[in-house]
Image (cartoon, rainbow, N blue to C red):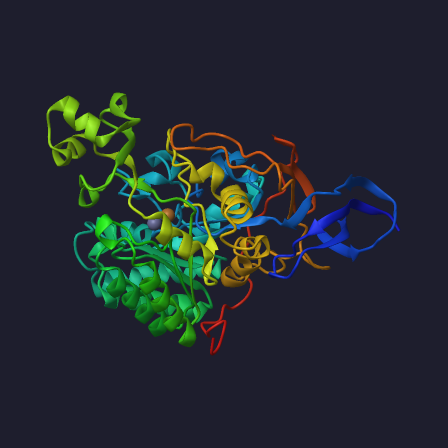
Length: 489
Ligand code: ZN
Ligand code: CU
């Protein structure tokens, strides 16, 4: 029997967390058709993979690639890390269903300029992805702030009952058209005034459709415990599984609190489906938020609309140059982007190593000087934290970027290497693997990624993307359960 593609003698890590084993993998069309000692069957292409590690393609569960998968479908920042699926629409902001008049509300401006918001329905967005044919698969959440932008004239208040009803209708339609669930970004000023009642109604809609609720918590600083409680209560009310976005203990006064936060997560997970995502860095990045301006941490300005010439410098340096306070300088720079060095290494490591966390880059693809997580998050977990520091076993690191991620977002037949699964695969040289992106040189391709296969098609080989691009839009197909995933543990 002849196969389309045969990968021989790779060390397989299948995404479930089980131990590696040496095997051959045969692929026909877009699926894995055989695994084991297959001998030397005929194949259109055979890859000798002795000494290399083969895993499921990585699933980046936290991205802001909404318009980039259409505008820059090569998706090199992600493909070059071994990512084969991106989940877009996080932190309350999505490209659809959005029709804008005037300025792009913060932080929707992370996704692009006004002209990039051209998808009044999820169906229109889905069609644009199919036309663009990105190199990676795309699954999408609907952003709560994006919904607000469609029905509210101002954001500094709760939505009225008719406005909530209108948001719910748009959300229902998008979920029916294949969106995975809803995200919120309650810490941002344009969502902060949304009270429990507004969130409850929308998350009920998510739960009824069998979708997932993800949230950038209302407070990642001193109010973290209360913000986690709020998220748990909302998800329980709506009977939707919960993913807390980029769980962190932000702000110098909050360092050392990861054990407390993680034990809260564990407690909640006993009764309800609860997980989180995180990235392997101690700095966050977003738009420049006056609420986070402080002299307690280093803040680095990555872009500024009114003062592009001041970008790529610490806020402190800019303030000194202008003879202004940090706050006044920040005000003058807005709208702007920033990297906030606001976490402790010990806290971040505990979140990353915790069994309920998944890896998500939170990369910002439209930032001219992006946080290095955009190009480096996945190799950094595998090479730096697993191989070098032994923070977690390689099998567990891979599970957090493949099997666990596919299960939590309902990505059927993805995130695992087994017969019948889609052939989304990455082959890497563990010794050579390295994230090379840094805060000073953030645009840099990882080394050690040998081959990336998306839906059975080789999309990346030894540092270069190749055609055809084979990514697809992944519509929600299954009902996600809100039941705990590890009962009694
Ligand atoms: Zn966020
Ligand atoms: Cu985000």
